[in-house]
Length: 170
Image (cartoon, rainbow, N blue to C red; front, side, top):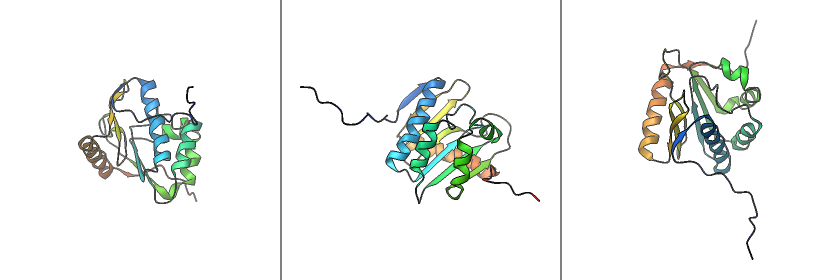
């Protein structure tokens, strides 16, 4: 007699090379879901503009909402945030609500390498080494995570605060 699963299988975090936009979007969804399930204390998203990230999807916002408990830190690093505001309509209100755990910086530098396209956590990371074709590598390797974090931190230091939760006018 076969045993029926009691719950839907949870997506595992991918490890190794990925290729293509669909693979990358699936990787982002899996990472956000894992962040919620595993209670990662820090989540770092870095990309020139987040144009092809599934941040505005209902499932992404639900995962971020489930993840955003006390003691968490969410970091966004980009070359520009206008795309996020324009195409990720669900993400913007979520960002406003959780402003106290979110830090955003913009790096005003030329070239696509000024800001890595990556997800970094203390346990796992994904780095799109070719953002144009959505190709890269993901995994749990401590050395790869450390090197990626160093690249993100270098861009972070060159950046300035951006993407405020609200704008005050006179």
